Length: 343
Image (spheres, one colour):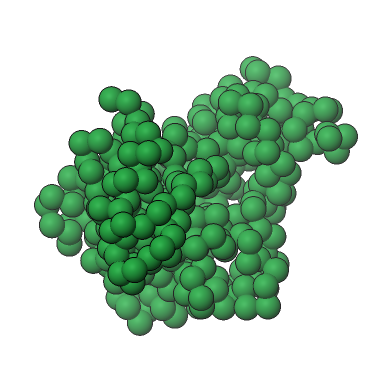
């Protein structure tokens, strides 16, 4: 099915967005991120019925299974008690949705604001609401929309993604050494250990560009990957986010805030050892993604995130002694992305 034309989107916006009947509508394509979803910001002029000034239109495909889960995931967030956007209309057949416009400012863009830590704390409060829930607490119709849970196979896939996309391109280690490391016992053991732990609902891609600021409030976005997993994975995604440099003191303060919120919501706790393992997993996944998008797909801007991701992963490894040999795989070839003489 062909995507709707701009004229069609403008005309249908006047039908589906409250108060937009008879409005003149302008469309701007929002180009951001690495997915195959397309977002437009629709702005209304000549409003006479008190509708919102703007809305976001999401046009998506079925190339990624999680694209089909976005609208159910919105319901799940609302059920958890986390803030979420309003869906004005969803045309499931044509794969188009009209959404509340939460604004243009994400958490990454607020990283140097005076109140950035307050916004981080609110972000962690929102995800804590999601983390207190198990899949079995959802209606069966929503359980069926969740993405496959984190299990040993998925953790191993993330590890392989790191080796196939990042290490094979940039590491100083030869292919045979990388293969020996990839298949070594500590990697499999860590995947099995993480998979054996009790699961809650998690965001899956909980990082600074997937949080929007609206006034003083944080809203999670790009949450279509919600599934069962470990809350520590989401925490590692945000606290060791390569997009934003957080000091150790800031990380500890934010972690304490999250612990307090979870304790008050459901008595949940954070296991420091699990958090460190989850940080290794998440940073390996991120390095694989940056390499695939940057070197594989030609989206070169992603390559600049490799150095901070490498630095964060080295820091976790130095503190824990996890995954012997991985630190050596993080040594980059001269001229490779993220090495000292790279542009």
